[in-house]
Each structure stands twice: as C-alpha cells, then as structure tokens.
Length: 165
Length: 365
Image 1 (cartoon, helix red, strand yellow):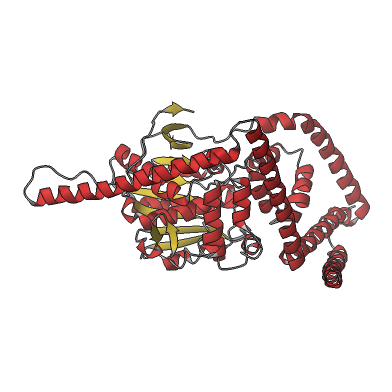
Image 2: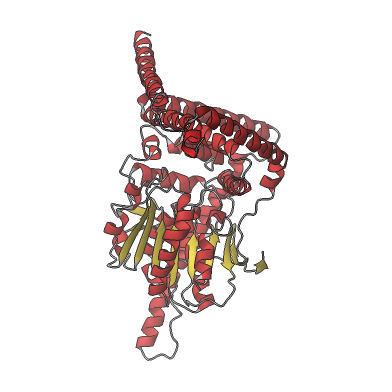
C-alpha cells in the first residue's frame, strides 16, 4: 500500500514538474516576438511559439516512464477485455453448436501446416528434378533443364486478368 | 500619409486583418456544406492503370503511359502492408508513379489488398518468398527480361531489401524510400514504445488476430500529437476558403484515414525480429528457412529518406548503404520533409524524383 502510494506520488510529482515547465515555456513563447512585426503576425508568432513549446513537452512526456507505464496498463486492459470477449463469444457459439472464431483459426492453421508440408516436399522434388536434369545434360541428353525460377518455392496457382481502371 | 507610416500604424493593420478575416470567413462558410461530399469523391489513384496479375488479395497494377516504355527493364513498386498504396499515385503533379511513367519506365505497383481474419497466419515468408517471387516471375515472363527494378516504400522497402538479399539475381536496381533497416536507435518514439519491456506483441496478436488498424492509426497520430490534434485542424480552418488547400487536404486525409489491418504473424515478426531484436542489421533475420544477409545485395542501391521523418528517422535508413555488398550506392535525403512529404511533397517532386528517375535510367536496359 505504502509502496503504491509512493509510486503514485512520484509519478504525480514528475507529471507536475513536466507540465509546470511547459507552462513556463508557453509563457516565454507568448512574450517573445519582434516589435517590428505587424499585429496579426505577432499573434501568429506567439501561436507558433506556444505550439513549439507544447510539442517539445509532449515529446518529452511520451518518452517518460509515466506515459509508457500508463500506455502499458491501457494496452493490458484492452487485451484482457478482448480476450474476455473472445472467450465469451466462443462459449456462446459452442453452446449453440456453431463454429467459433477459435475453431476457424485452428482449421486455418491446420490447412497452413498442410500447405507448408506440401510446398516443402515440392521444393525438395524441384531440387531433385533440377539435379537429375543437369545430370542428364552432362550425360549428353538432349533435354534441357527448365528456366531457373527466382526461388526454390513453386509458384502458387494464379488467376490472371486484365482490367481497365 | 505615406506607405511606411500606414504599415507602422497598428490600428490600420488590425482593421485590415479583421477585413481579411471576415472575407475569409465568407469563403469558409461557402465551402463548409460541400466538404463531406467532396471528401467522398476523392479519387484513390489518378494514373491510368490495368490490373495484370492477381493472387489471393494481391493485385499488380500496370501503369499505361502515353507512349511505349523507353526502358526495357520494368520497375515494380512494393508498398507497405500498412495503409493503401495510392499515396504513390495520389494526384496529378504529386504522383511518384507518374514521374517514372512519364520518363519511359514500364511501371508496376503491388497492391497487397486488405487482409481479412483469414490472413492472420500469413508470415513475411509468404509475402517475400511467396507473393513477391511470384510477381517478379510473372514480370520476367511478361517482359522477357531476367531482372527487374524494385522500389520499396517504408515497410515495403524493408521487405524489398530482404527480397533482394534472398533473390539477388532477380533485381537489377534497388530503390528504398524511407525504409527502416536499423532499429537500434531510439530517435523514433515507435522504437521506444515497442521495446520488449514496454510492449508484449505476442499478447496483442494472440488476442486480436490481425493488428487492428485503429491501433496503428493511434500510434502514428501520437507521434506528433500537437501537430495532428492542434496544428492540423487549425491550419484546416485557416485555409478552408482556399480551393487548392482543400483539395490537397482532403486527398491526403482520405489516405491517412484509410487504414487497414496488418496480418497478425507479419506484425509479430516485424515487431519482434526488427523493432525488438534488430536482426536485419546483424544478418540474422529469419525468412522461412533462410537468414537474410544484406551483404548478398550487390546491385546498385539508391536510398532515399526524409530529414524530418517521425516514423522512419534517417538513423534507421542511413546504415543500409554500409550493410550491403553493392559498390554502386547512393543516398538522397530531402531535408525538412516528412515521411509522406517524401512521396507527395512539392519539393520531392521537384528535387528528388527527377534525380531518382535519372539514376534509374542510367542503370536500366
């Protein structure tokens, strides 16, 4: 409890220090203008000075441990909420005997693993075929090896079409 | 009363300023009702193009120029997996693509499409050794050349560098545009926020599947909160009566708000291997079964960056030229410009792109 209180007090003090410095920078910026400038220009100068001071302070603030800690807490809460929602919806769908997102994800992952195994096997076969072709060429065969592709991986089946935009 | 005394009189100047403001307000009120409708009518990409290849969600656009391409080696733009690629062809006079098309390059652009939940398991290997290899194979078959020019923007630049390192024989020239390569420096807030002790990417991806676009958008906006939440709306209000400003603003904002999710596994790999472990510069970045060795890149390299880039500071892009095995390498830095300005800014159109086109023309068949 005491530790928590100390931590909070430290954070509050750091936060207060940063923003009191910002306020002083803004006041400085507000009174830094050229006396020769036209009045509307003075206002613009003051405004850009204030924005520059604010921008600098925000940059410092977003690099501060206080901001990063609060960002982490916010992220944690968002992720926890999302997980709770996912679990609740998965249970509801399961009770209704409908496929949940988790079921679909698992299915997708299984298909991807299968695809990967098949493609890896095809890679190996492509290498073997290339080796056999080059051996055949060396032995005076008339057939030539196919053009080397960019990668070992065989291309996916593709659909090609032309569309004017 | 002479001119100098009129200028020196603050009352006269105030009155003039008030009159100007009143006249601007009339213009603002006049433009206000049509803004929403105009925002809906913004064109996403302006140069004439045809889709010549499709695979899953990927579309390869071929830009049709007024004349036959002068250079035989095709040029392919590889865009990032974040946001949509039409920033490279945003509007007339601000189009990177048009620069190359007009100078006689046979130009293509990879549009990755919008990932769905079904794409959450796609990895960098699928993009680099799958889609990119297939696109380049298709281009080589279509054009009858063995090598292709590659231009990668932002995350697309990182992917292009990895691709070139893994398949060096396919790439004739490599151009990187604001591409993050070295993630060691902490200039960018993103580097600090994504440190392992600050950000658990596994939990995020496990819970959400794909990285939500709102999360990315919030991170990007928070890089310059004063600029994005104060200065920008104020500038919009001030210039709302200027037709040219409205047009530019709506076009850019339409693109900025057009966020898309990033496939979960790609996001996990990008954050973990690059932002958190900086494996690419150590030649230990895994893509499938292989490790990316940047020294394998031996083709000519042009590295373009912006001096005031919040998203990808120069410190992340500059080291690339020292990490590759190429002898012919050049850096172009547009001082005072930001990440998007590098593509669509007026100075970039005047200073950077003609130079980049010239550089590529000298090295293309």
